[in-house]
Image (cartoon, rainbow, N blue to C red; front, side, top):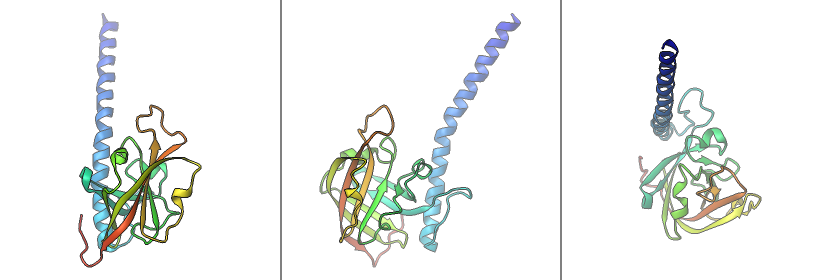
Length: 197
């Protein structure tokens, strides 16, 4: 009888802890987005790196806006796992966001960049740089490349935005050698009117 009660108590405690852990992950993700948005606003104000929390090893460098999908996301410095856990990351070896060159941003296929597969040539993208200037792009192509194909990372003579995620989108195992790449050409910049987002 006592053993049965202990077993039931242990199961209830285990279930409660499991539910609490399951609720903590989305709550932590939501809080991180609030902190990232705040850090982005501070970045726009100071034009300098602003860490979203004191121990963060990344900071906002741009805001990516996808009007056709009603998405707006903070882009973080670096395309490593620590940054990509919270948002898309700027490949630091590429041109700075908004430069007249190829700026490369990577994101996870099952979270922030899940929409990439539905972008079509002609779709609009916007990238707000750290100085507040809003740069406008049009998608020119989408392709699947092997991870060893670095041609999509090459510098450009014109403003260009390259978005990269793992492929295929519905893969059960993370990683793999294929990448889905969306490339967009710069068409204009709102240099006179800085957009607050």
